[in-house]
Length: 377
Image 1 (spheres, rainbow, N blue to C red):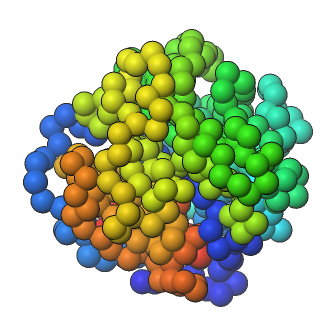
Image 2: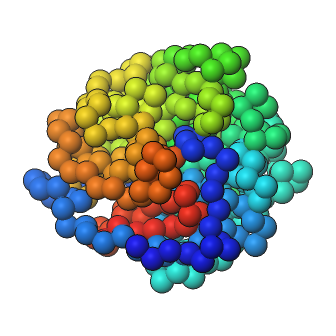
């Protein structure tokens, strides 16, 4: 694996700060997903594409999403990445989104000023793994802010809606948005459904004890041309997920989400090292609780980011050991590959957001041990 110069390497305060987008941040899998075989079997090489550290020094890359269409300053095939820590490495204070080309070109898409937002965002700005790009170039990113990088000061945050030039045009708060941690989205014409995990429902008050109040929200949006999309409805479709604060991890709770072609929403239940499934996620009117257990234990070790592979399998990256695991919808763990082996224990806390490349022959992922975007191909 190619590495960055030492001057660009930066490690997080914590060995394991849960995030996902990745997570995993993933759109719905195509209905024509090819059957059989492990997607990871054809991917053998890991390369570092670029540093994710912008000019202001933000570190701890979290959200990862592949841009599907040219719009404004966004370019098709590039990867958008959100940063959770500031230049002083304080968690929950990162304010930047960077756009990275597959060849390694890096630009700052947005540097958000918490003091000049168009609406409320309780606590400020600390960009999480909750990251999606909607039709029209609207970017939605979660914020779980702290004032000093510690869980005791974590606040509810919001979803920030940016236009295709990186300007924040709207904030979404309340109606269950409380520490938005990861997200995926699916759009049909002018309508979009966001699926957002939330990890701060009673978590800070729990003082490190497990609190089973993590949620998954379906937030329905309607697009209006050049105006920011409006929230039509919020429905809680998942609840009761384990979450907790941790002195070395800020918050641990439900993270990556991915939508299967049959409308099932898959959730990385990080605390319990398992993947669960919420059926009828696009249409259900009530919470499914934590859903049905798809797979637990085995190679799953605090799964964070989650994405749906072209064959309909689930890709998750582990917060505990730096591995990526492929699980089929029946729960069989069909492949595992180590993406990061730095630190002690190897790979712990290095992986967060991941996204399948546009041509479906690679997986992009952020490596927090090096503050970099890497690719498995």
